[in-house]
Amino acid sequence: MVRLKEIYGRETIPLMMKKFSLDNPMKVPKIEKVCVNVGVGAAKTDPKLLETARKVIASITGQQTIVTKAKKSIAGFNLREGMVIGCATTLRGDMMYEFLDRLFNLTMPRIRDFQGVSPDGFDGRGNFTLGLRDQLVFPEVEYDEAIKGQGLSITIVTTASNDTEAKELLLSLGMPFKQ
Image (cartoon, rainbow, N blue to C red; front, side, top):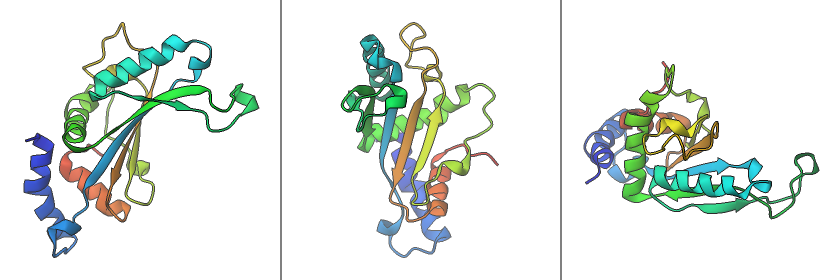
């Protein structure tokens, strides 16, 4: 069994039931999915950058990516509807818990001058979005294969009804928030 999933079942559920006075363990918020997204704006001129980004995200998440396309044209960005602008993947189940475990315990301590994740990333509905400036903080990424200075966005979708429940859930799983 995945370590973070065990922690959720053994420690988080009783803690959340006690803290929020829940009578049923099924009412305890849980993580539904994790979405990893990379925008590669320069892919419209150099298609190799998109393939490199897809390989890097596949090595980070252990899962293939899908190509994202522009939904509408924006003249200021020289962008036409249907142009390829990035890639994304959605993690669920055991792969999601493994990814979060690696993110909390291996990747975040590798970030230079890391003092914790800002709690401002909640959207008001219990979901948390985290942006990383560089892909090289992941131990799976080799320096030669990554796009220099390419960031990524990680969205953690929970079943929590508000931000306080979601924050408590992520804290109990080991998310290092700023104090």
